[in-house]
Length: 272
Image (cartoon, rainbow, N blue to C red; front, side):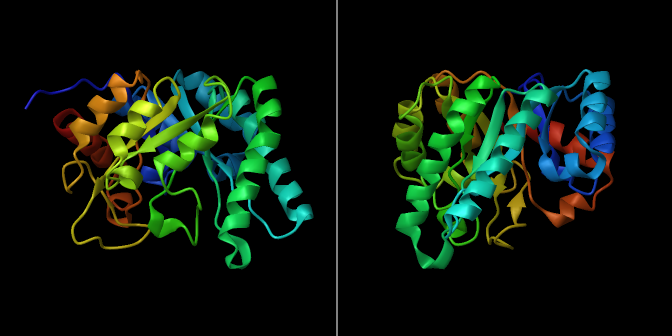
């Protein structure tokens, strides 16, 4: 099998969630992983200013900030508060030096999925001008349908493309996460449709049998996803950015950090 280099590899911070931001940065430096994707709860642990200093001093590239979104709520007041939080996320992304805020759009309140999807569209529409003023692109990440009740009512790349196409590619695009989209019979047509507006590419694997709804993602090569084929399609659609390894898995979280990062690099070169 042809190997690939790690120049585009990014550690999505959730893959080693027990680590603080400082520990994750130091781990990337030791492992010679050039980029990191940051989660907002890690910023909150030490504050934005200290987080910014750690990243600046490290020389690492920040591939994205996760996450904005969660737009849907049953009252206008709560939707307004969530929009305010998204504006803060945009500001954080700009301070950290990334130009991509990943949107996990949120579930439906009160079983009202149609209204939830309308509120998601309205939230993105209201956020775009502020994000553009800060130099931040919004990346809509469709999630696997099994997450519709808990995390996002945007569950297909088709739906994400439809939302994104209301805006210029330098304003709103899509995130292609293999765990969420590999199953879709329309996947490759939708990847081609997203040409020019793919803002992120995330890899992991789908384990059989799937051990857990949230924490059951696998290391690349341990499951059934056609990783090389999907990467080829994404690149054919013009994406040449970082490739984030994003794995929710407690067994991997419990590995010594340097051992985990070494495994990530090995599997990335062999399977991605």
